[in-house]
Structure formats: C-alpha cells, structure tokens
Amino acid sequence: PSIGAITSAELGRDDFPLPNFVAVNGRSFGSGFLGPRHQPLLVQDPARGVDNLKPLVNGGEFDDRVGLLEEMEQAFYRDYKAGAGTAHDTTYRRAVQMMKSKEAKAFDLSDEPAKVKEAYGDTKIGQGCLLARRLVETGVPFVEVVQGQWDTHQDNFNRVKKLSHELDPAMSALIRDLKDRGMLDDTLIVWMGEFGRTPKINQRGPAPGRDHYPRAWSTVLAGGGIKGGQVVGKTDAEGAEVVEGKTSALDFLATICKALGIDYTKVNNTPIGRPIRIVDKGATPIKELFA
Image 1 (cartoon, one colour):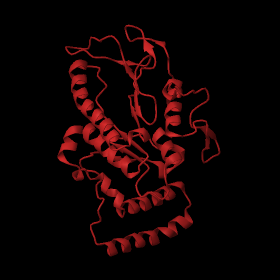
Image 2: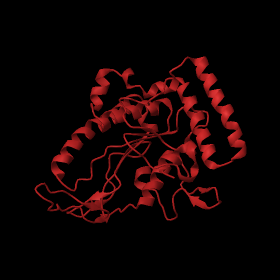
Image 3: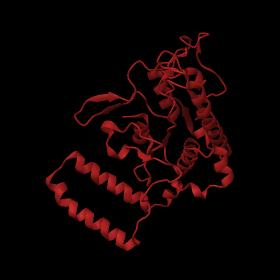
Image 4: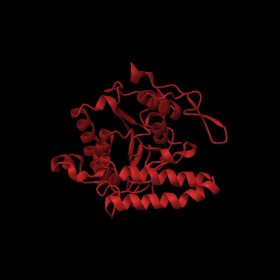
C-alpha cells in the first residue's frame, strides 16, 4: 500500500463521507491489499473538482435508482462472493455517500476569494494546493498533489525555471494559509520527488539536461509538529554523494509515520495471511526533527 492508503487505514474515519485519501493532478499509487476503501479518489483537474458529483435527477428519484441498483445486484453478490464484487459495492456506496454530503462542497474552488486563488497561482499545482487545504480543513487525512514534468533530461534550465515559478507561490501560500488558520502544527507537508537528478549536465542535443540520479537528493518537510528551520544532512561540493546525515527511504517513511502518529512497526496481514510491516525493519525516524 502507498503511504496515502496507509494513512487512510490508520487515521481515516469510516463515518466520514469523503474519501480518506485524495490524489490531485494525476494518477497515484493505490491501496494494494488494504482494499478499495483506502483507494485514492483521483481529481484530474482541481479547478473542475469531481465530475458528476451532483445528481441529474431530484433526491427522491435518485434514491429510488440507487435502491433499484442495490436490489438488482444483491443476487449477484449472493451467488458470486468475489473480491471484485465487494470492491464494486464499496465504491458505489461511498460515491453515493459523498454525493449526499455537505462536505463535498470542499471540492468547489469557486467558494474561495479571488485574492486567495491568486496567491496560490493560476496553475494546476497552485489550485491543487488550494484544494488540498480545503480538503484537509474539511477532515480528509491525506491529500497528494502532483506537479509533473520534472524529468528534465533535456532543456533542464528553462523547464526547471518554469516549474519553480509555478511551485514557489503554491508552496508558500499553502504554508502561510495553514499557519493563518491555525492548522500548520497539525498538518504535515511533504514536498518531494521520487528521484534525484545528476549533478553534471548531459550533452543531449542543443538543450542539455539532467538524468536520473539515486545517490543524493533533497526533500522538504514543514508543519506537523516537527522542528523546522534546519537542514539535516549534507552532500559534497558537487552534490554527488551524501557525506553527512544520510537518510534512507525507510528512515524517511518512518519519519512521516511518526509525525502523523502512525506506528510504523505495525504489521498488517494480506488477504492470504502474509504479514507485512508498514515500514520494513531497520527504519529509524530522523531524530533531529523531533528534538
């Protein structure tokens, strides 16, 4: 399961009408063996919100149609007790619950003042971060916002400049907005990619770039009760090797879990009974963040 699905399972509420895991601006890794209840709701365009959220018929007729669907499917579920049927039923029930809820209004960015939307930036990452704030404020425990196009094998300098101009106002507005609303101490912001970039420029055509590089890269954490205002770890002058305070992927995941109040040593069992820890053995949270 992804960290979003784990957070949904550990911190989510069964009685909450919205999904406990929302992914904005692109596909996300899913819930794995934790099942469809912890699968992310995908919002492809934050400005549009969730398509088909409002019924096209009145409330009574909508309820009648839902009831008819459930009645027709009961015979199938009785005869075929398959996982796919359960997943289908779970998805439909949660969709109907969300459509009827007042909390679904969180997906509508038109409620936000123009000045607030402008601060985040009129970009998908900016509006995605604004949507994330609205969802967290409503009670969604985990929101993932994607900004793609960082795979800069070519034209690195122009592309990074453009992407940074989109990301900087979105990130700063999110932190400031959460702080102003008294939410920053209870909300962990994780700003990261999944890979580093080469410290040396390649020679691909007229517009050189940077290639994949797994040996050193940085992430940013803010809020969530961690001790901010510091840099943990250090690379050499070339940014090629970690020479101080190396953090593994396992350590990083354990750090996120600790900040969120999740027991990263917990063992979950798959449907066939295979025990799998939330974070594999050998992980240690970054102690400097919790001093």
